[in-house]
Image 1: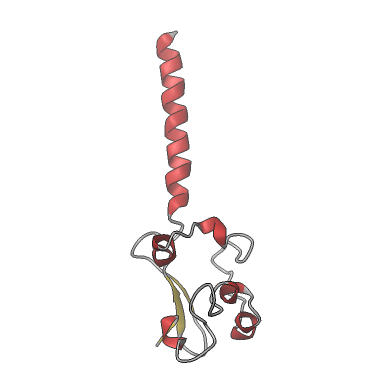
Image 2: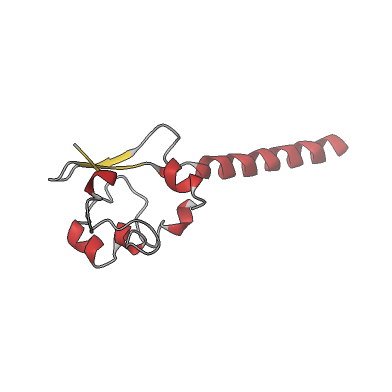
Length: 108
C-alpha cells in the first residue's frame, strides 16, 4: 500500500512538473516568432521579455491570442496603444512608434 501511495505522488509530481516546464517557454530559447510586414519581418524573442521578468500571462491571452496566426494587428493599432503598443509606448518600454526605433522590431 505504501508503494502505491509513493507511485501516485511520484506520478502527480511528474505531471505538475511537465505542465509547469512546458509553459515556461512557449517560444523556446533560440527560437523566434516572426510576422511578415511591408516594413520587414517583425521578430519577437520571448526570452528577451522573460529575462526582463515578464511572464507569458502578462500578454497572453488578454493582449495577444496565443496562436500562430495571431498576426492581424497593424502599426495603426500599436499607435493607439493596442497590442505591442500597450507597453511599447515610451513610458513602460521603448516607443514602437517614435523616433528611429523601427529596427528594434523590424528586421530586413
